[in-house]
Image (tube, rainbow, N blue to C red):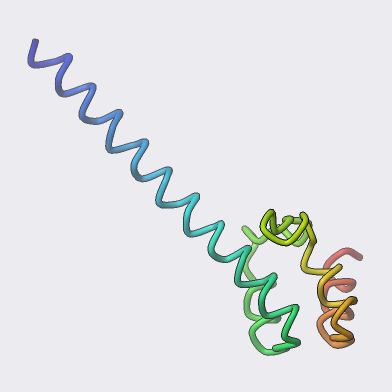
Length: 88
């Protein structure tokens, strides 16, 4: 019926919107990981200002390493300090 099709369409759009939101969040997480690995302090600060960012996110293509781990491993002291300030 028309109502069932309408409801199905609304549900589909809601799932698509949620998927886009999740993809954007994943991209932000990956970006935080990358800028921490490269020690790009300004970018780290900008990303940490977003309340949606998860500093414990693990990069699955890099053996589940967190931004903190990769910043430490690469000797990015300023990025490490910024991440530690978020934890406090």
